[in-house]
Amino acid sequence: MSVTLEHRAYTHLRQKLLSRSLAPGVALREAVLGKEVGVSRTPMRQAIRRLEREGLVVQVPGLGAFIKEPSAQEMRQAMETRLALERASAAYAARRITPGLLAELQFVVRQMRQVARVIRDAGGCDISATHRQQFHELDERFHQFVLQAADNQQMLRIVSEMQLLHQFFSGMAVPPITGANAVKHIARMCREHYKIMRAIAAGDTTRAAQSMSDHLERALQDWTRFMDAQSGR
Image 1 (cartoon, rainbow, N blue to C red):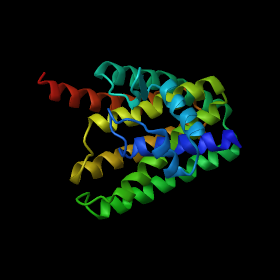
Image 2 (cartoon, rainbow, N blue to C red):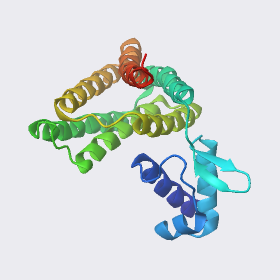
Image 3 (tube, one colour):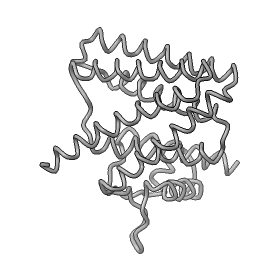
């Protein structure tokens, strides 16, 4: 039971982080957060400690737990780690994916295209928070299925942590893309995911690894350009 409650508390906190409901520097009050999800302070404390291990929370002696304010170096390192390991995971997935996981991967790609069409038809001018969240959740599911298909639990654990860091840190640093740029960005992401899926389906380890690397390298380049612009380079 305690494991279930801890997982519920962790999932709740994770969603609040990704939705930016919890910003850097915010104190995490166990009693208040526990009431939000209907658990006691103990499972909430365990969930907070898990986030601390994942690098999203920092403990300040005498003051408690706070959402971490990451440095640019930490953000870059998280993205580079994710890129290196997910490149390998795509190659392993091409070699080991089961028919069931391949079907899940293909379904996610179709769902991403449907959401992308809705955003395209809206012209990208008024992307609802719901559609934006749907697309990000599908993106996360796609990468999780690739990791599961790689059949390497250590890689799955490490990359899952890096994905969360990447999503939280990059979303915190880079403002949401809007307008025509959003339409182009999401269309590009759909093409990249489709290319990765096709390579994995074909059992092409080299092409799967390169397609995943290209996909995440573009994300790293986008973030680097934004950070350089912010620093006036």
